[in-house]
Length: 443
Image (cartoon, rainbow, N blue to C red):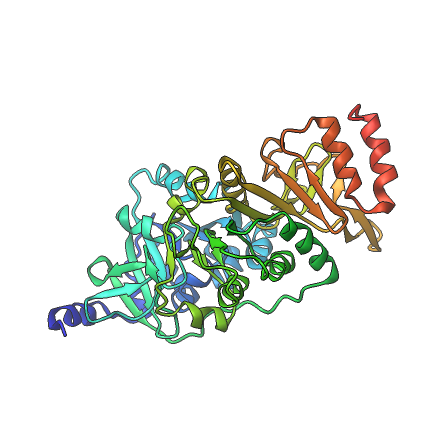
């Protein structure tokens, strides 16, 4: 046991108010992504205003909690919130004018933000699993930008929580790199189980039929990605190089479909930037050296992704127009989520000589009309809704899949794209889509 290391640790353990005293006016505060956000610290962060700390910017990504500073205008002069990826709490805050959105590709998120600091200090608020006898803690659920922030001089305030899994790779942090520690024992944030529908199964089957043995895969979360994972269980020698590590990937490893034996990069290892899911997922990750968490700046770089063997990217979208443009993060101008790594992975997969990128969606959705009545609309549309963010350009779309089939758009003309997309739209909307395509001179 290294006594000096443990003395250093003890000297950095603070109460929450003491830890928050580290934050000064005009700091740029960065929180851990998703489950890596420090719940106890953030629950008290609004109190920095009582100490006359003003003019701070807070950047979060996939936040899980609905904290005081995003519920009320009262804290905006102290903490101005900007988000890289929206969740329900941020959507509500945005509607009130409390927060706004920062467009970015995930692999460039922090790099671009550093240009805007202009002398401001960067403060990282994050969760770690406990320190070992050598003085190392783990960033646990990921290092999408957290490790990069530390390498760029961020002042680190960390919650140390024994419930969080110890993970390996760029998640490893030495005690000397941390300014203040708060010991907590909150439960690890878990996602509810998402049931797989018949539509999901149909889409999953279409996608799985086009994925070859030995492919390296990237999957997101939700009913469709879960169905794809289920449909891949009969495959052999799959590998994982992904932004998000999910429960579906645990199942693929445990059934033997994934062994990472034919990967180009990190052969024998599953590579990810962060994890979010169930207790089963976290138990699988704990002290598991077969899963390596690496900096999102590298993992999500399209040119890195493209080096993988038979790279396959599988993502979802909200709406696709007849040109192949994908709106995956907003409904019209209303921000729902974020670009995240969709463009990174879709482009990266197609850099790979034998790579494939899949964009998946249901053919229809139910929405409310102006009278408040529920109506069914097509998610394949002549044009995207006015003000919609184009998350994936028509230049970067490969396969589009609904429960009615597969439209392969890569290298196709606008006419061919429109024809193929109409063919996988819901039958009730195909006539209308064809008429609109003809009006726009697409057909």
